[in-house]
Length: 392
Image (cartoon, helix red, strand yellow):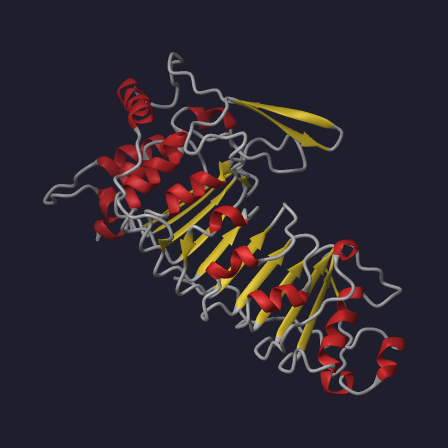
């Protein structure tokens, strides 16, 4: 029965890692493979759940998750959420070594089905380089993505050793502390030597195809800070759920046309200066649309080129809703319903800073009664929507 004990591993204390690493590398009696080979899911939660995590250990092998990646070569699910000491209210992502992304691509190019990364600074070209190898990937969530600027950055070049992050009225300077001469206190000297060697010799696996890179099984993609110029190098023929945040303003969404297959039915979008009409034109098969957009930047007169016949649910998420007036976005949606541009729409779900309004008004009245503007938003508020993801 021991062989089943290591199929799913969850780590919440770093003190467990050195002992676990030795255990995963061990080959039990009457077996020819290590315990780590049987591990199919690895969850690393450090700095969460009110358990103290000393962020200094990140530089003692964090570039390969302290040896756990090569020790578990058959992973199907990798979820890593590593948060440093809470010196600020905001999460400041770790500076990462390029070896981390190369190590993931090398070991999991044909096995990984689900990848979730939170708390790691990763540039968009790293995302592109890593994902193209993960041919069996089904679900992917990556936070803290940084821009790749071809005028300032060299593609696939190691990132700077220092970075300043604006935080309110001051700058926080992050310094890369990879120091090969420092004696590691958590691991034996031989393991420390392995970490140093792996960092120096890490490389991308051989890749012979050219863009667009196809991920044939990917159904869920969540990228915080999407840069459309780079995502166009991919093809996602089975994508169903897309959750993207665009820090940069775009005049249109034409660059997303390449990742809008007929299977894409659920979209959560965050960005500025984008109207529902633009999104509808770009994603004609949507059934659910979530908009995380501040109302002050929302275009007031969207124009639909053709009716969107599939959209059923719209969720509006904003910190700037005025409780004394009908939200502008809601009015625009109601206008579109009246002129039959959203003939299938049946629910608007409004989320205001964590609060919910349970006022209910059927859409069948919104299509004919002009007095609705005097009575507040014509919307049906519900407690749940269609699922944004399906578990593996």
